[in-house]
Image (cartoon, rainbow, N blue to C red; front, side, top):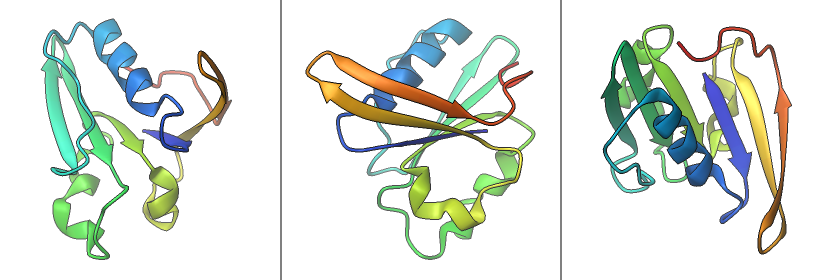
Length: 115
C-alpha cells in the first residue's frame, strides 16, 4: 500500500496516473475526491485509488481494509487516516517546489510494492 502525502497540487494524482499507465490501465484516472474510492482492473490485478481528504470518521465503513493484501492500494491525503493504515505501508511525500518542480520522498520498504 502506498500512502501519498502532500499539499493540494503537489502531484499526488499525477503520480497515481503514472502508476496506472505503468500497470497498463487504459481508462482515465481522476481523483476520487467525491466518490472516495475508485477501482481499476488491469492484467493481473487491481489498483484501488482512494482520496482520504473528505473521509468521514466512520472510515472503516467503506471497506478499504478488504483490499489490503488483495490489490495495489494508493491513498491520497493518507495523513488524514494515519492511525488506520497498515504497518507495511510505504509513505510517499510530495512537496511543491515550483510550477514544474516537485520533491518526492519515499519512506518504507520498496521491494515488491506493485505486482
